[in-house]
Image 1: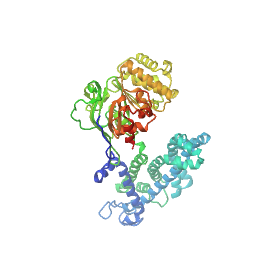
Image 2: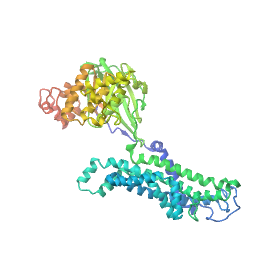
Image 3: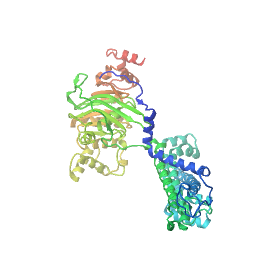
Image 4: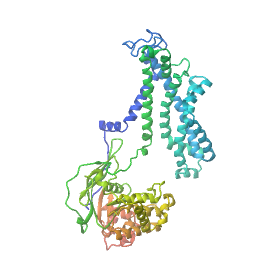
Length: 607
């Protein structure tokens, strides 16, 4: 592999109108919602400035039709409907915002307290929450308003105190998990009290949920006030949108055909509800970008241009004619939310030879997993993948989703990174293995279960464990089960992404021994992604070094470990001086072996 060096940062910034358009497209709903709320907020603040006539001033005939002088006509008292609508915005928006604030604060306190302290505190608070949720909201608000009387403060408190329950339940759920996280335990171990832990560590994590729930509560509060006003429980002397509708109905607007006295306030309620829904739907994702995840489906990414086929390349002393999987000019570019582009892989050429074990090594973020996911056709939807990925002479990338789907698990199987969490926690291991077996072709239920048991026994797990759930397995057993699932459809290529991560040395050795025996027995071609250079030296026949999205060097393990040609490769091995060489010697011994000629070169690379 030709020696290549890293270029500049792979992140390309898109500026000017293109970046603005990208941001607008990504958050169009949020922008529209915020713009509408800003307009209504400005109207509420400056209603006296915008209104052409003072409130409660008769300026014409009863139920006068819309005209150039009175855009929305006149109401039953000859008052300008447009002016009444602007003044009504003040009261309706005030009730919505204040009630949402009350419900947000109460819901936050109840949810965080219940989730953090648990026990009887959680039991009491959540039973109260359940009762509030079960009782019908509008009838209860009417009863309370009838008992206590209608006023601005009473209306706000009534609505706010009846809306907090949903926020409490939404907030409690993540707090139940957060209280057991290591960063919380560390803070407690450093002497932080409950108050500091809640304010500094728990609350920032759930704040996006609280904001999102509170924005949605604004719409609910305005709608509730409108309903109460329409039923005659509005604020005496007030002028909210609900009261405008109530007065128009009670004083014959429908019989007079004066639609202009009813439709405008109704439209305002609908538009505000829509705006709050748009903002509430998007604000949580904007404040917490980790929520903007996508599911991996074959071919969901964008396929870039297909290059012309290259002549068959060579890898060290071996010709690539026996390559079972061939990669040419593979480029992967991710489109980021801010209109930027991240070039993750650059013109990658790779030949994976039949029956061999290839190790892919490199530092974190170098592009190893991105390369592996590209081979599976599981790149993220925001990725543009171009090049050629040939299996048996067929370019899977050119075939799109179907090109990958018909080969996944049948020809190419995958052990994912973090395989210990790769199982469905509510399904038995038998159910999940049977599903994988049936992926290979139509078989009866009995045959699939027999095959699942055979797979378990082949990887060293008793058949009797099939009826167990994933949480009943140790880490090593889950890893073996993941291997069994990957082999369910009898693939020819096995891609393993950090398959021994988080396992102790003894279990790691057992997993490698298992993979070795499976490779010999089934004729598997294995691609092994790892940070462990010693593991690659012991297990693999060939290795490829990845740096900043490029394969900077590739060859046999013996050549790569003892005669590296690339400066980065030498630095990588020098940094991992504890790793073992292909002959079982340590890197320290290799560096001292001047007969191989590597020590002086490594020293120069570091210097």
